[in-house]
Length: 261
Image (tube, rainbow, N blue to C red; front, top):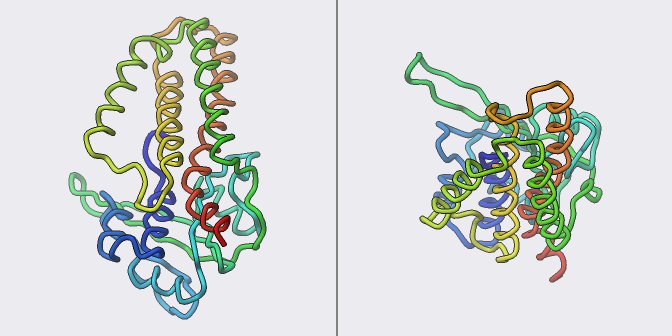
């Protein structure tokens, strides 16, 4: 959860492009990020993989009005609507983009190429049919914001009681550094998103940072099997809450446009 999911970048900047708020070049540059190249395979009307610029234009021509995000995990098909084949691919990738306005979805496949020391990342988005139905378990922005605040408070208290290093000064310092980077000009969401979506996504990312620190930092007092089990149990619900909030934030553009129709 620390790094921005590729599906989030594609949905956010794809939505900004569909709305005419950014140029195709700027949208593609933001989506690709530090990767070498992104291609889309299986797009209707195309017999071979195509670049993102052509793919986004073709999706618009096919009737796509917006892009939603899914961040599923085992037992939690968050943001998905089927069919089972698409859900299985999305679960394997742990993320997907679902088109609004056309029964299509995109699942990323990430690969590395190049010699040692000069490895670059290539992403192929597989375009597959989806079921047009409400996405699973996605809260409203208001619900997500309340859930995050409660989860952050409750989990911090539990981890502090378990003497987990990730709940104390180390976590606070890391979160402060993360906030400083954000305030230094990092664009959390693409143009066109409501301010509340930006706020919810920022909080979800901070919660994800806390979860990662608590899970990976082995210098706390939770050393026995029972204490480790308690740590995992404490982290599970907040990780789920953070994923739900991320999806709510990325999907806010489509939800707001639908309310305006």
